[in-house]
Image 1 (cartoon, rainbow, N blue to C red):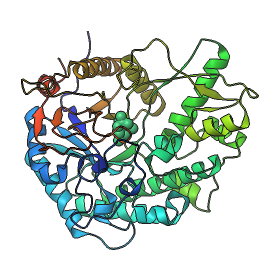
Image 2 (cartoon, helix red, strand yellow; image 1 turned 30 degrees about the vertical axis):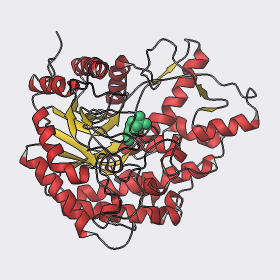
Image 3 (cartoon, protein in one colour; image 1 turned 180 degrees about the vertical axis):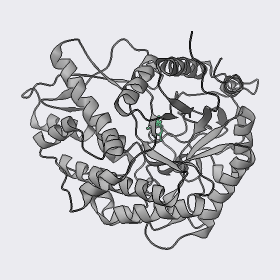
Image 4 (cartoon, rainbow, N blue to C red; image 1 turned 45 degrees about the vertical axis):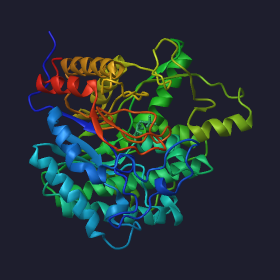
Length: 461
Ligand code: BGP
């Protein structure tokens, strides 16, 4: 017999500021790297997005109708400090005060991500995460959030998917031309995160804070020892580097060895070691969409060009691992492998390593939803995907994992970073396309009604 979901389980949904809000230059907001970057061809910019900035009351009412217990969203750094490290924008503060009050009015717990891929463009111009001053700007920004919202927000996450920013940086606003520089940026983000966690604890006795990386288990392609060893390496570099740091304040030994072998070790400044040790996560939030698979990548198989390209994209490192398709898993129409059991394995693996409570901050299926003539959106494929993942969550809980929240991506349709508005994830359909804003009206998808029942029955659906 399976264990039931805990009584106060946080059933919710997830978004990020630049993907959902729009109003990109309203209310005193400054530009972020997302507003100024080169867009993939045929893809909308982020200027209007789902226009949540102007529709937040309606959107929160719809979340409440679904029965949301919590809502995981991000605050746009450039609404709070438009140029990253200068004056505070009170209008931006007010927007989030209003949003948080609206959530609390409906008994929805706010779960706040401090930084979700939207570094202020002004900081990027000064070197972004290459520049150690960005650490101070980040910590100051966090202090402002803790001071202004700390009386109402209990759950905080520092940086969304830092590991994905590092492994596929160029696409989301950071990036660099060498592996050493990339991992130096990574180091600066880790130091910034540790300081923020420490400040949070010093300022707010009741608050809980943690990282929000994308964690998914990596399988070996075969049961050959060399493939199993390759999987261990990739897990270390992709997953454990980030969590070992957030929990133990030290670099994972195997990840460190991979960096060392590739002349990519970060430089420590005096004091970094103590700072990293002092910042401790209270819980682990993680995003899970799919698992990964790797095989051994013998040195000598790659040309220098391939080697550099692989390393830049995080695809493979000769002598360690190379990512390959799984082969037996079904895929979404956008080619993402679907692996619900991988979620159970991942949750158990994280819990065994760190024994901290876990919260899922993203999980979901991107599809080309269509609005049918009967005025509905029949997204049975999404229901199927989510149901299977919820079943595996319940199995993980039965295994003994302390899982306390689930926030599918996304609460409402929003812009996919790489695919624009044609790839949708929400329970709520937003009536627009990439280049036609239509009326931006909100339509409840079939998954909306289904998820409402899931929440009402505390996951017994
Ligand atoms: C995660 C990000 C989200 C979101 C999601 C879906 O990596 O944290 O911001 O974009 O992936 O990805 P995509 O929109 O590329 O399908």
